[in-house]
Length: 102
Image (cartoon, rainbow, N blue to C red; front, side, top):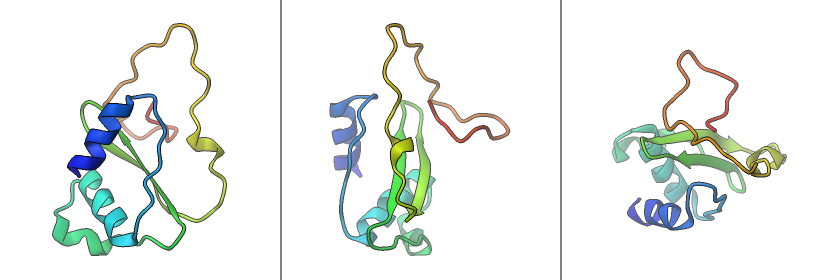
């Protein structure tokens, strides 16, 4: 987890990057992002070639997708940056929301 968080910090908050690994490694990353003890990572299902997405913020990670095998990844690409950008909240939307963290 230290390596994942360090790499994310090095790339910066606007970076979109990929970590490709075996299922147990991905499940361990997801368990950490979900706040689960590592002993519980086997409760998470990660199929071969599936996509799971975690967004790291200053406050906490957000699990955006888990075990997605749908094929459409266009929603993972952030929109073009505008000249002025307000700092995105690193807290969860109260009561749910539209499913975005930015």
